[in-house]
Amino acid sequence: MFKSDSIRPIALGIAKKGNKILVGIGYDKVKKQTFYRALGGGIEFGETSKDAIKREFQEEILADITVNDLLGVTENIFTYQGKKGHEIVFLYSIEIPEDTYKDEYEIDDEADEYNAVWVDIDDFKSGKKIIYPEGFLKYI
Image 1 (cartoon, one colour):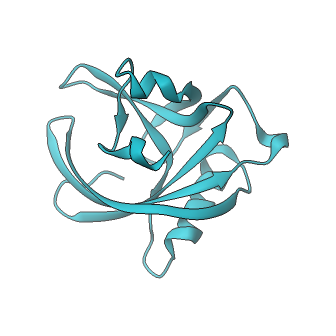
Image 2 (cartoon, rainbow, N blue to C red):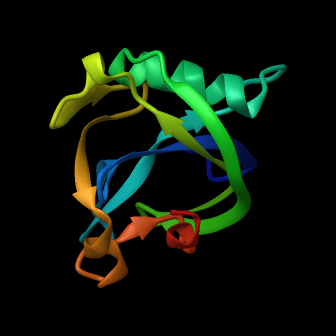
Image 3 (cartoon, rainbow, N blue to C red):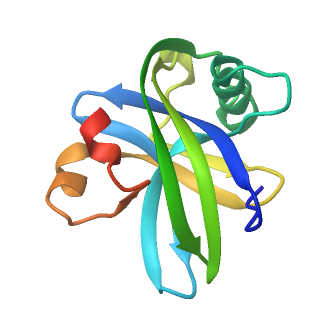
């Protein structure tokens, strides 16, 4: 859940299939901007970032993922829907089991409903599509 008054630790997973990555589609009504973000979410108290990413993928797409390397940790200060946000982001390389692959996933979490799709990395590198957090591309 997005909070605008505290720093939120989150874990995001980068799943690759060829030259594509799995990302959720978001829309900022204030900016009138469609954007993309890797799947994952908040780290709960007493939970490791690795355990959080496993839990989040199980909740969001019903997949028991394999968590590989921690690719990096980045700080993300942003504005979403007109409110300031601040996150510490743990980015992991992950693998999704072949039997859970779909072209598109419908995700209904506590705070939002959205779809996740496989998007060509070149669409982000060229600027055709926007991915957050800023600086994300250096990890893929």
